[in-house]
Image 1 (cartoon, one colour):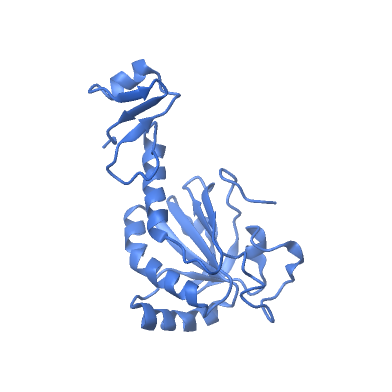
Image 2: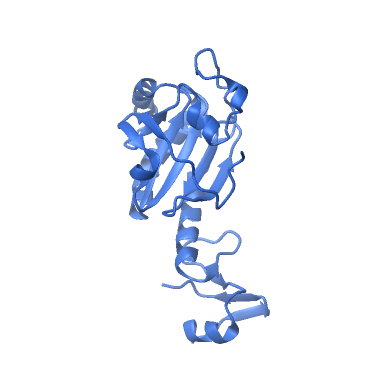
Length: 219
C-alpha cells in the first residue's frame, strides 16, 4: 500500500553500519529522517550523503535523527562511506541501513512486491524508485514524503526548512506561507477564532483577507 502523510511509519528491524536496530526504538521520542538510495557507489547519492553528513548536526539540534538506506548490504555501505569522506570532505556519522533482500524498500512502497528478494544482479536503474525522503514525527507517523529522480540531487536545506516549519506548527496554531524561513511571518490557522487570536497575539495581525491573517512568528 502507498504510504501517505499521517500514516503510521512501518516499523522494521535491520542491520546498519552501526549495528542492528529496531526503527521505532532507535527513533526514541524524537523526529527522524529516513532517506533512501538505489545503490552504493552512485555519483549523485555520494554527494547527497556527504552534504547530509555536514548538515546532520543541525538536525540533531532539532531533536531529529538521520538514517540512510541503500539497496546493498551494510558491509558495502562502510566501504562507500570512505569514498564519501574522501570526495565530499565529510564523515558519515549516522547509520546506513543495509537492505540486500529489498524488505524495507518494499515495506515503504519504494519497490513493488514482484521486485524479488535480493539486490544481487540489480542495478541502480532497477532500483531507481528507491529515492524517497521520509520525515517521521515523534508519534511515529509520516509527516512528509518527497521522491526524486536519480539524475537530480536532493535539497536537504529544504528538508531542514520543513522540519523547522513542522516543529513550529506542531507547537503553535499556525501555518507557514510559501518560501517561509525560520523567523519569517506566519499564518494564523482558520480554526482559531479572532477572539482566541487576540488573546495569543495582543499586538494584532495583518489580514488582507479575513481568512489570511498574517502575524509574527511565535517565540
